Length: 92
Image (tube, rainbow, N blue to C red):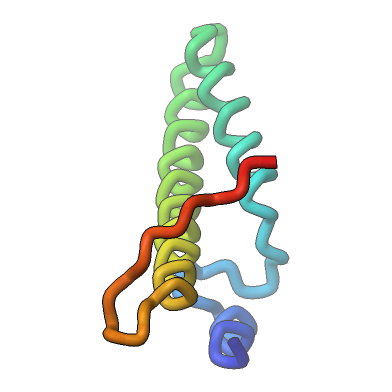
């Protein structure tokens, strides 16, 4: 965990030095709003392209975060023999 903090301070792997990372849900909501705006088609071409580029960046960031979470979950649910045990999620 300390290495992730150090990476973030030194520029991080995604170039977001000095920026506080948004929560996953905030980034997802921002992406959803961009999609709605683009689907409406009332945006100038240049603005649409800029929104699309930003959206692609958000998708990559969100997917990376999901991959990290999936890896952590697999590590936490690994069995003694090295396999991964499937455990049902509690649905509240």
